[in-house]
Image (cartoon, rainbow, N blue to C red; front, side, top):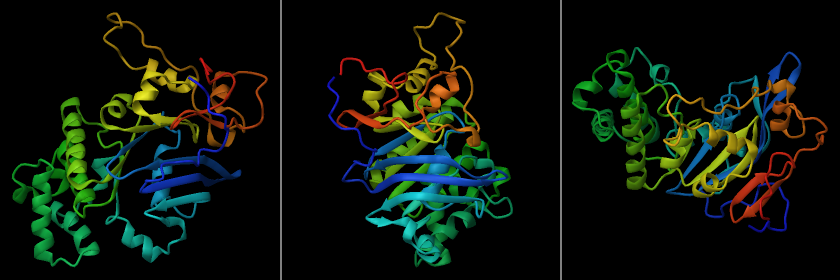
Length: 340
């Protein structure tokens, strides 16, 4: 594989993208001052495609996603730099009133925990109807009927009955389907799914992923799938972004990353996946150490920081393009050069 002769920030993204995030930095206020949780993240997703964001807990996946539609907790969180270009508009330049029209209608979000994403004192049908009442000109009766129809579309049996029930009357899998119904009822152009199968058993997980894929094919929407499960990435995504300590360390087509991962962190994640080739009761490989605290992040390679490597450059490693669309953070000790 020949290394392309350029070392630039990862801003040369998909020109057909419905969403481009360029050089995004997010900070949170702490007793020591503002600390940077997301540091120069760039990514894109095209209509009808699925982009996966993967990494350990604390790597900045959810914070990056929440920044897209300005859902960061305020005033302790802020976007310090970067652009979030959706359908040709920089969402960072929109007023609260304009953003209000985008959220839920054009961009929808499946939150990480279905047990707390629903209001416990309102019926399921009312909560789904609210999306349509806010973003369309439907009457209450029309919104209710559309909500019942959407419940049926996401695989909930007896949707008329369920629409009149409260969240505590549903199982975890049913509640997750309701959250998906709320996100999809207005037929958004972009769906951000933050761990949509968390805490669900394997059978329900497969049903939820199949559901998102079928609805995506029907409506042609773009999907950002946030997860720490590389099996989910392999099954559902077209491209994948690997995040570590608030940065993108590798990005490319799913087939490229799984076939030939180039960053040490990506390889370590893949090595931790159970395989049928492993002998029974064998110990799976683990990554030594833990992700550093935000206020302890170094300017240089943060995976080297985790592994305790010495004599590291204080400069951030540049992103290099190995082949069309396959980028990696070019740390001399973390990026295997191979046959470039």
